Length: 98
Image 1 (spheres, rainbow, N blue to C red):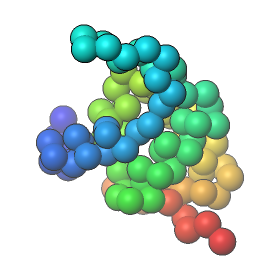
Image 2 (image 1 turned 180 degrees about the vertical axis):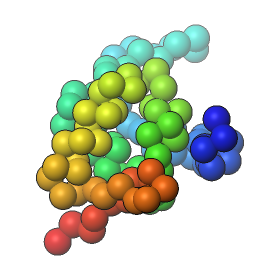
Image 3 (image 1 turned 90 degrees about the horizontal axis):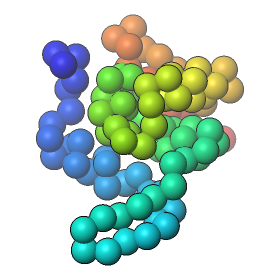
Image 4 (image 1 turned 45 degrees about the vertical axis):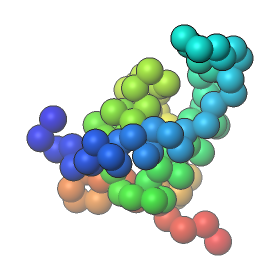
């Protein structure tokens, strides 16, 4: 994981920012719905708007929420729409919305 440059505190912070619909919650477990494609794209856009991240960092934050394949697809769609760009270091950055 040498290309992960997020601190444990940043991982915790970004993980808490991901909001999903809660189906059930008790003292032992929280059951949430998985995001659909549009929701996942919005989540990823918000993450890279705050800090440029590579695929591994995004996957680390969204582990248990979305598979690497779904994240790759969302990144591709966001790039095709011109909402994000990939830098030479492999980090994705958001293009500001107008």
